[in-house]
Amino acid sequence: MPSNLAPLGALPARFRRPRVLIVGCGDVGRRVARRLLPRVRVLALARSQAGADALRAQGIAPLRGDLDQAASLQRLAGVATHVLHLAPPPSDGPRDARTRQLVLALARRSAPLALVYGSTSGVYGDHAGAWVAETCPPRPGSDRARARLAAEGWVRALGRGAGTRVSVLRIAAIHAPDRAGAPRERLRLGTPVLVAAEDVYASRIHAEDLARACLLALWHGRPQRVLNVCDDMPMKMGDYLDRMADLCDLPRPPRITRAEAEQRLAPQRLAFLRESRRLVNDRLKRELRLRLLHPDPVTGRGGEP
Image (cartoon, one colour):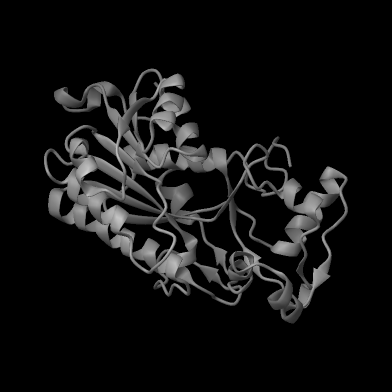
């Protein structure tokens, strides 16, 4: 069993073999599953037969269901002792019906002991580069961030109503060399960044550190607690990509003004350039006792760019 999980003997008798349900078992979910298997039974929601087959090949027990179809989620009631919810909200609108339907299904019978929800630091909105702790009131600036905040409300309602220990992780930008959309790809495409005077701060977290944070929160998170999940070094986007380019022996990205960016970049990319903040991660390290493997977003500690 992973060293960061509670001893099985410390759990009630009917939970001596924990069952972890992962909802949204993508890259990070699979990293979590690898750390749990084979001692802990891992289940994951699968929308298609192909997805179910892929999960089964990795030792994960698939449960067919679709977050957009409430009736398909009924079998989730009572199936798991711990739930990790990493599924994104719908792509449009400020609400998250998916999380609402998941919470209602989980509450039908034997609600889980713990639920960890992977939210986003985007719920804080723009802070002009200031440091942001969990006590800072959310002020989301986009529908997607508003949907994440709505989902936080639904999982907290489960905690209040069913006694589930809920942890909300407000996650910074995720990176890892083996993830799709890694900085190398952006550098090879020559995607521009803002000139230094107009650049924005962003916090980041390595995918492996995020997976470890999820595990710790599942077993040791405080009830109804919000935690920022990020490394120790928030950086301006241009500085980050400059350092990555130097390490990868690739050209540094071109710099453009904000006005030029409004004309040249896609709306999704522009959304990241309209918000600047630096996350405080004291709770992550003090309460979950997470020792970051990659405290620096470029090289980590013994890591790779």
